[in-house]
Image (cartoon, one colour):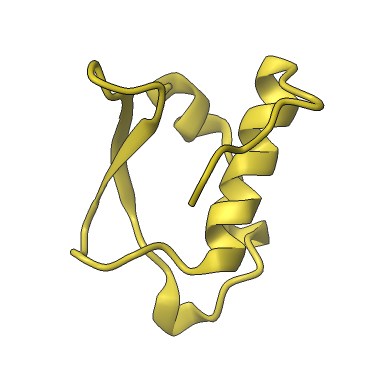
Length: 71
């Protein structure tokens, strides 16, 4: 996941500059099938940034049609 993060162009993310977050690294939580992102701030990701990241993951790993799960 961290190599994947290095390849993402976060400048394309449709998020206001004040809401931008730097992701240090991302890993799959061992207790769930969710990804955990470790960031520079302790706030929830802006919905458009979360959607951008989901779409990047779907495109990179071929998860087209995979449900995003409950929020």
